[in-house]
Image (cartoon, rainbow, N blue to C red; front, top):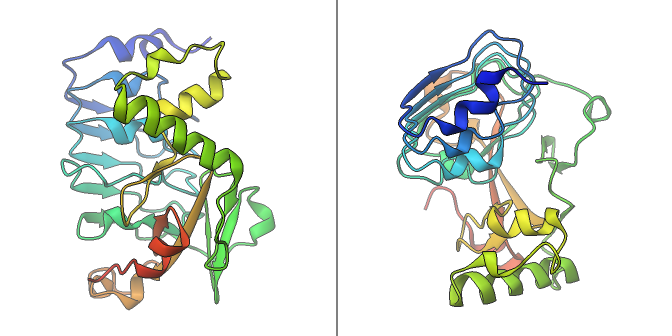
Length: 246
């Protein structure tokens, strides 16, 4: 059973600052995304291997620090919120990709992207030239520029989302009898939103890599990291037209 403070932290609706560093945590509190006033979250030097995508929905989060953990990927939507301006993920050696939403934010990523065999990390990976990044565990497949037809499940999820969310504004209309719990959760909190057009994505992403060393930010890091920015797109059209520097 998890500690009581982990179970109840979601009830702290006025909590603004939380520091849970150096606690040997392997996951963050499940209901942390319900702390709607949270502005500063520090979880350095734990054993965390992922950041829950629900944290991207925190409306007031301004600073996130998860340095010195075991992260291999970050949520697709991390940085999409205008409020989030500071992200520190230094010394996560398996971490090779930063969502392109973090471009022009203040980021710390020294000690990330160390050479490692892909087989050592059991995650879906995407390679471009000599660059390889790991994708969030929830991603089911990777699209390419030659894919012109969406998988049926992705097409169905986007149709459901557009129908019930955009028009009825109420996903609670769908009961667990209508859809499996896992799919309902995806409708409420998609994997991410297209970095080009903001279309919600549920099972497939079309990634595009931009090595940090080839961006104007390279001078700020002076060779201390080998990570890439990753644009996660919803289609071949968005993949082909996305430009990080434009």
